[in-house]
Amino acid sequence: MSTPKVVLVVEDDPVLGPALVQRLRLEGYRPRLAETGAAALREAAALAPDAVLSDIRLPDMSGEEVYRRLLAEYGALPAFFMTAFGEVAQAVRLVRAGARDYLTKPVDVDRLMVALRAALAADPQPEADAPPLGVSPAMRTVEATLRKAARVDVPVVLTGETGVGKEVAARFLHAASPRAAQPFVAVNCAAIPAELAESTLFGHERGAFTGAVARNVGLVERAGAGTLLLDEVAELAPDLQAKLLRLVQERSFLPVGAAAERPFAARIVCATHADLAERVRAGAFREDLFFRLNVIGVAVPPLRRRPEDVPLLAARLLADAVARFGLGPRRLPSAAMAALAEHDWPGNIRELRNRIERAVALAEGEELKAADLFPEAALEPPPAATPATLDTALGDAARAAIRDALRRSGGSRAGAAQLLGISRTTLWKRMRELGLGEEG
Image (tube, helix red, strand yellow):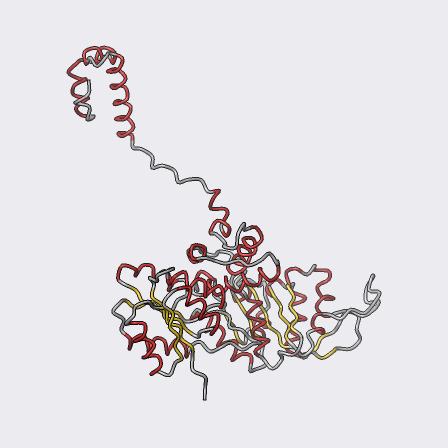
């Protein structure tokens, strides 16, 4: 018999809170009621809830602050917010930050139970050796595809923009496969010097070339029966593409200077930000190699297309940075989380990691501010004022000239007209046009 899921109810309404607890018990859950934000955080620390139902308005803090604190401490978990009509905008912002749904009061409890059941069914606890890649539908699809690919021994090609987490996806695939206990070897094909590329990948024998004073085991051999990740595979030179084709087809390789080929037992996973099919059409990548490698293709979406993952990733990266730097605790309050949610992330997860690590290293206090995460915003010039039209500029100049003339003439319109070189009638008409009829 499975253990009942723990649902934390954060509600100070003396009628709604107990009613929700009673309904959750009938549905087979293990509910806990907290009437304040502080009590909710204490309950969460003691019980590690599987889901949260929270009012947005609480006596001591907002439901949004409770959610952000839980997110930073425990990562993403299904959260539902109950709100009055005037707070719908805030609830929508929370959903964009990763919460599951919001319901306006009076709450449709039946609808809430259906949504809660679906969320918990879709949120199994991750395996310790293969944590989920994200909570967004897009990354759930990627994860499901990789889990299926892990069962069969065929090459996989991961595509996506720079910094989206292609190597993380490759490591997930390795960890979910029967090869998990074997080596995972990654090589950036674009970073290998051309003259050393063959030796780096396939190894060399002693005396194979000048300077080869000892035998070198290449990355292909070091992968053993595990996984070999060829990152930026599109950048391989044509001669190495031919050797890689033989590696994939014949499952064997020849170290530089060796007399006999050696067996290759690892799985090949490739990653690239380039369009390999376009490279084939341009003659820059071998078509036969493309078809050999691209048995299962998986596109990893950019972070801007999966904003639901930002809070979870931010919490993980924050925990990692805090543990590595040893500078004391750091938190991402609601304002900082909102700033992260609003950013477009052109540099994807790599940019997110960079910003969080910088903020952790340089922040003055425990709470990270939006300015810590986006310091360049403080350096941006203020928006330029809307330029005036020619008519507006001329009118302003005429008013200033007339007022100056009136001041110099002691308020005399005749004197002002003389100073301006116009007739009294013309001055009178201009003053009326410019809204100066009561002056002088």
